[in-house]
Image (cartoon, rainbow, N blue to C red; front, side, top):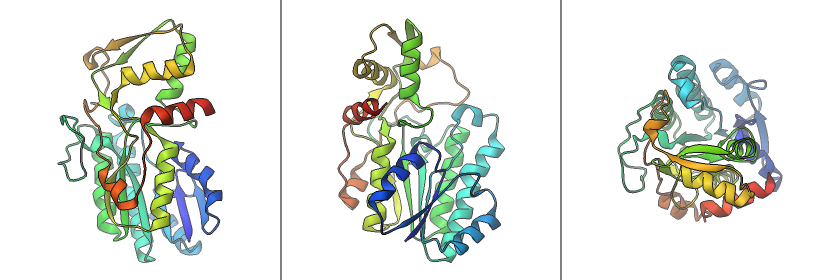
Length: 282
């Protein structure tokens, strides 16, 4: 197949590129803004047709959660409208699409892991626009898969793991939120899952993917320092109210992965195993 990857310079896009050599039967077209403007519907349609694209993995998004609160128009363009342009273009060719979404479609008031059928209730502009993108893609492309993920990190780009390591080397003390619970996702593991879905064939619907387990940001930071061997920086637990942000964060956003594991026979690593793998690479 000819597969279009958008947002190839991001964390997930970079991880997918590392795996592409393992799938020589496919041809991958890795694009970012320089190669393809996904906010231009005509450009997308022409690209899909001229390159005979069979499927799209949309990793592109506006992910600056706090900035989105004051930049709603651009956030909506990238997260709500652009995915529809992609979905409509590939639907015309009879192809498939994988759209990456987020735990922010939930308000975080659950006390048990969220399943795909739980009511959605985003409480931020980022979450709202990502949900709009989900709904529109499922409507526009019959062969589409939505993957909601959370707390993404990798050796690429800017993320919590790399930020914590940098701050741990610069500071003597650091405050980290302890009353927000979720599960980290190593982008490499998500990339492997996406390749498995492509390999086994699209079964349309919404799926959840993160690593296994559940922790707070505080516990995550403590684990990062333990594994990275950072001993000279003390981490203090903070309440969310002590660290106000423009966008509201879900207090509990653990995702239930049963559906994707059973549908695609995927084994998902425990979060600490994947964290160790990532830090070793760093």
